[in-house]
Image 1 (tube, helix red, strand yellow):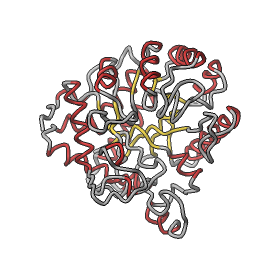
Image 2 (cartoon, rainbow, N blue to C red):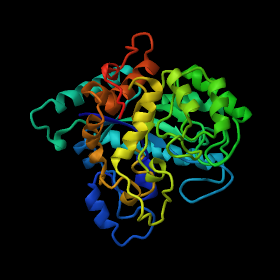
Image 3 (cartoon, helix red, strand yellow):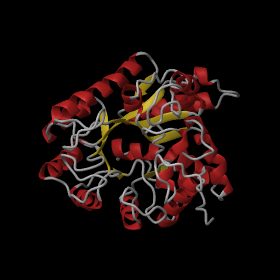
Image 4 (tube, rainbow, N blue to C red):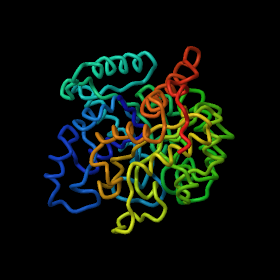
Length: 378
């Protein structure tokens, strides 16, 4: 079954970690076997594995912060530096597109043609990953700090950016992110107004609670959470509580369940041994099911794996070795009582329908393929 992944940091992974994503994950692990550092020799994402896992489309980031707390390769001392880094990440995607490896998708016509091509390939008796179409990218920005001023957004739109999360971790230029309690800044309110005018999708994932509600008050466009989980199951600020999840559902948005163990299971500590804890993809299904029960259907949840988010296999479910193993969700969801249509919605249809509605609301079908699927009570 085709998969749309709502969150990958492909450029950050390739450029910060100096990984050639054209190589398979196992070759890269071999090359990094004597390289110290978080996640080294344990990577989960590479283009061959994406093709093998039928990841037809993903939302992939431009990520550079400017919070006043500089940190190598992620948080920069000035907005101009953050702008330059994000432009370099965008240039990486354009280089991949030029080489025929990727296809940047920016409108409904491109989306339909891309999904049709992948669907035809997937319908072959034994589709060969080496003959798969180019991987599809929807370009997102994780932290709007690289946007020099709100009136620069039109330039970013023309370059292919389509979704924006105003903050990441810490106090961003436009909004408070995870780990703080700040609202939108004055420029943040202006940013959201310009996003709405141009048609950007707002990704609320990393917003502080205060910024989350301030953003929903200030923005009337399409709203998602590309990669977050349930605070009911994992009680810390990085996840959303039921009121936040319901607010996204009521705006006809989609929540992408993410796969870091610390976000799946309360008590998991990143970088610790955690021998007493065991996490599998079934725990991710718990979060999926929680969101479905809140919504009363399966139209508002999807996958936002974040599998290349700076850590390795030891920080993800034990039954997931590479991104190709996202295919295991088909069996896991079926075991919980989800129908084939519901599973198709969760794995690809809900994200596709979200983009259709965002990019062409006059003609988009308001009901995704998942609507006919039974909501599990397991």
